[in-house]
Length: 100
Image: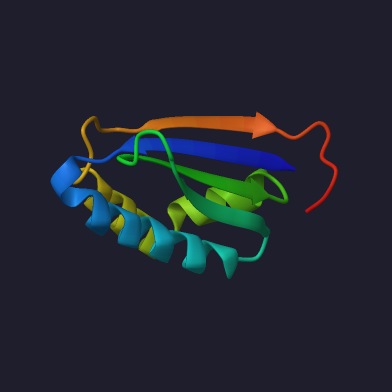
């Protein structure tokens, strides 16, 4: 199982739009084969910071996700809404988890 974490810092004036795009991305991603969990999280101490966390069955599922037309389109729209582009993205292999 793989976990992805993407961190975005929105420009204050675009936070609502970025959050809407991130929520759409999460909803559409959850419908994909191989997506085990996908969520969007807003930092409670700095509400311009968003995390998108996904869990994928395997590398093939993640690659298909990243190559999908909707993913490419939505993520390309992120770049005009964030402080720094590209965002910080990390990929991890899950070695232990208590539930999913």
